Picture (cartoon, rainbow, N blue to C red):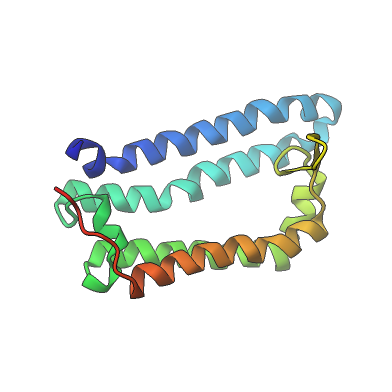
Length: 163
């Protein structure tokens, strides 16, 4: 069990790649309908793989250099561990870049123009593609959830590692 919590970053990297490749696989049907979308889907896929793995690479560096003991260290940023602080700063930077892309670089419109990247489920059980307006309305809620989690890590009492 200790091995799992010490090297959790491996699982996170695998899941990030799996999500990226699933997205790439599902985008093929949209590219078949409109080949002009291929570059956009490819750029999005590369962005998921690159940006989505930055926090996990930082976690790996902390683990492999011995600067962190296990994943539980990342729930305690107020301990001021340098790798944990870099991890949290990186997450905040990724949030800022996401805000910039969605609201100021036309990312919401990009997502709307590339169906299948995000879908919403309806009460009837069907799912529809999401619009740029919906992205701009609901992204702050997702961001708020992440921010509340980070605030809890900084000011709450998360349990320490059982190992």
